[in-house]
Amino acid sequence: MIPAARRALVALATLTALAALAACDDRLPAAESTCQRDADCPGGQRCIGGLCVDQQQCDAGFGCCALETCQGGFCAAAPTDGCAEGCPDPDFDCRGDYCVRRRCADDGACGGGRCLGGYCVRGLPCDGLCAADEACYPHRDLCRAAPPACRMTCAAGEVAVVLDAAAFDGPQCALDEADCACVGPPAVDTGGDLRHASMALLRGAPVFAAYDPDFGDLVIVEDLEGDDPRVTFVDGLPETPAEDPDAARGGRVEPGPDRGRYPRIAVDARNRLHVAYYDLDAGAVRYTRRGGDGRWLAPVVVDDEGDAGRDVRLALDPQGRPHLVYSVVETVDGRSGLRYAVADDGDPAGPDDFRVVALSMRFGVFGETPPPGVLPARYGVRPCFRLAPDGSAVVAFHDGAERRLHLARGGLDGFTVHPLDGRMSLGRDADPGGRYADVLEHPVGEWCDLVAGEAGVQVLFTDERTWALLAYRGPIEGGGSIEVVDPGGEGRRRRVGPDPAVALDPMARAVAIYQDASDNTLRMGLRVGAGWSSPPLLVDEDGPTGFANSLFVRDGVAIIGTLGLSSRRGGRVEARLRVLRVPLP
Image (cartoon, rainbow, N blue to C red; front, side, top):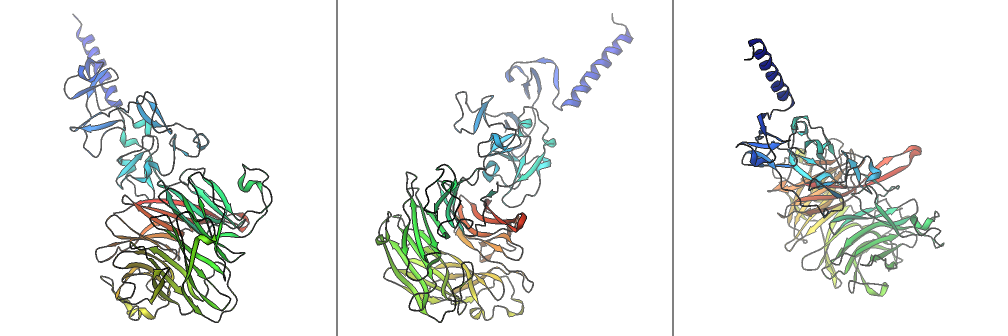
């Protein structure tokens, strides 16, 4: 028989051991209950580390570790990926029959990606698909209900990320101890002040055409959502032989002709890149194309009559034919305006493959032609352009002499042109001081973008009197409504609307992005119901930013291409091309 004093010591030791286990985890092992698999344990328990422990309770939104799922109110092991022979994505390794991203110690181990929380990640963590109340476990590209420390408000375009994600794989994890941070897309520094840039999507991935002012070249920038973008110098190179074919510009450091301003890029159904741009030295609009074999077409001079090609715009029809609209600052007979060019087929290879007509031209008395970047006080400048569903070209443009906005529709057989004409529709917004009582007399339209439908157009344009961003909805001929997208400062010094871009979401709602020029931030508006969302969403304030904006909407996500500037020592201005992905409400 065990003496009473000894029995007390044994009981005390047992209680001490149980207390130690309780301090380690709140899922206590059943006394002397060992196991090899879950089936060896009683109901409500599972086999963890050779011991039966109580199952963790959960709901569909929160409670389980990263490699678990919530089943019937309890956490259970998630199905494995069956990856013993490798993972389908080369950026993932198979660990414990689950595909997880490759481990890393620094960015250098990630082959163009970045090292985030010990794992190689490309672009935005979890592709930016996590909801506002979720956090990203980047090693698995897994969006889950955010742990307590991850319930933070991240800026638009950022994602809440669990930094030491593997520590929460399970089957036992302390989610309340998760360390999180808001993470945005990687910035891309191309080494130049690339104020002229546009974005397209190639197989879903952003690709930019941009202008490098250091050399005066047209460049194509790809793989922007990795940390090692590919930059190809396409036009503007000097005629000297390449010193190093594998180096940028073939190793040539001297500038060539100044080509590549106002670049516009589009992708056809065969995944070929089409680019139109301005040759400053020749005063001409040029076009080139990259074929499926990766080789570039020798650039084509589309039009060199007069100073042609500033603010060129590009669209492709279903046959892949490029359509161009561009300004002609001054012709030899003293006119300015717009021309329209269209290729005979999808494979133009020379000037004779394009047909060029006057879109709208006017005579004027001109002084010295201003340099690029300065808006000429002339008719037919800074156009915006889309192809309508019926194949017609729909254009809005600014009259720099009279400071008015005009709308046009047509094709090779001619265009009809109408001054902006509509009625002000303020909706729920008041009009303090009657600012818009004479809106048709305001100087407007220095910046615009549009979408064209069967029944009419939606045109975004700036109001240079009120410093607001407005929108016209209706037929080209006029009679539609004019709405306030962003009122600006309403008497304070706040100017909004430069570099606008507009697209339609899957519900046919207009989505607009634009720069707030007062603080150089990027904002977004969404047309809901009978008007525009108020206040507009602040998308990016890592500025100065919001230059050269492009916009696509895919699967309810706004994919934004924009350009930010930063100052370096010596007064040098450098640019950062950025891709932002913003889920739409």
